[in-house]
Amino acid sequence: MKVSVVIPVYNKAPFLREAVESILGQTFKDFELICVDDKSTDNSLEVLRAIKDPRLRIVELERNGGPGVAANAGLDAARGEYIVRMDADDIAVPERIALQVAFMDAHPELVASGGRMRLFGAEDELWNYPLTADACAAQLAFGVPVVQGASIVRRSVLEAHGLRYDPTWPRIGEDWLLWLRLAPYGPMANLPDVLVHYRRGAQNIAHGRDKAADTAPLQQAAFKAMGIPHAPEELDLMLMGSTIFKLKPTAARVKALRRWYNKLIALNADRHFAPEAAFQARVEQQWNKLFHHLPRYGMAPALAHLRLSGHWPMDRLVYALKYRINARLGRVPNG
Image (cartoon, rainbow, N blue to C red):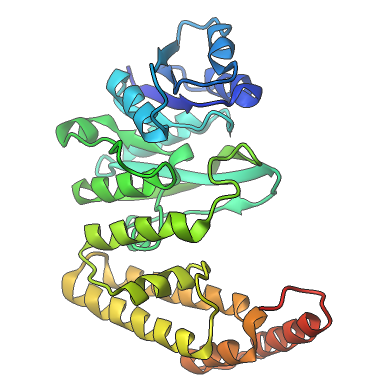
């Protein structure tokens, strides 16, 4: 068997049939579909049982263990050369598996890959991920290099190294932790194609949660896995660079972040946890993206960012000034 598609399921009954049918309707045919019911309290299990297709296998867990535990049950049951992951409320494009299998077959060095996601429902947005192996390696310090719901993984690598989700991991961000475990065994990359339509709404596991509280332990785990020493205040700066503001950005904190980024670049040059050019480019991308979030907190942090960037683009100055005027008029958030 070429592919095992694994879908953990917990209380996704209203969306589940559409998700399953998007897999059963794939142009690629050599696959099995493993749906793991994580002790749902709605009628998700009944929805699965009503789908009569010999390619569908249902695994029923005796107690709710979270997405990592459910995914592990699917991985243990899988027989395919590749593991394709999907969420129970999303929709795969018809060519998804065919595109991903062809990509992995053409690149035997890859341990995992993914593609783009198109959001629908509460949001309409395109989520992009780094395409090259170097860019994915650089991304690991900042977040997931491959989006889990559009991923494909070489099962032989998982089995050879005993790689699974840790049941003690948090229920948010377990994919980032798995990629950190997988990264030492080979590169990852992404297709430029949209592979999955990702449903956004109150049913998402991260909806309404404290992003700083969820992200801090994941970021700390990434630092540990990559051998990046850090002080608590540097962890907070890393979150700020990801526009997660535990503390209000000030000019002093913007300057501290730039020092931290310079330190990261120098550390990578010494320890080589990512290709140097790709890592420096990723740091600068993060730094530049931060600017447009700073005028909300006053001109001082925005001007500090411009000074440290070494150039004063007129469009950024105009943006900051317009934002401050609109903030004073109550048209946009202020502080």
